[in-house]
Length: 151
Image (tube, rainbow, N blue to C red; front, side, top):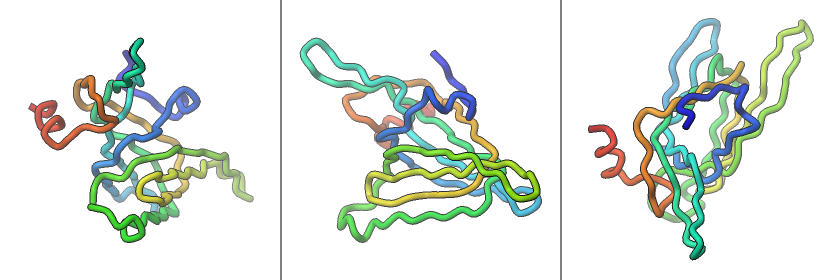
């Protein structure tokens, strides 16, 4: 099973219902930086013969490189619910070519709960599992499960 990916793998990946536990922004050079998401990556959606669904989930770091023009719009107040990790609906990418020939990509992360969106420009991403996966009846890991996997 694969443990590392890059934007070359984008078309084979899905982040649907992946929980985001943390966001980091690391300053880079020339005004760009790294935009890092600590996620529970769903490796597999497994359906048994009885119709019960389980998920193979692992903590992962999703790192977007050379990020500029970051905009985060997530509204927890509209959901009127507890503050919990938000979940991704889908990630979109579109090529950008500037007048002087500079090439980049426009990324949009649709947030399905609570409703929202994160958008930015980035040269690409890398993603790496940081711990073993766990078979779970839930699409995300609890704090306790993440702690056990950290040990």
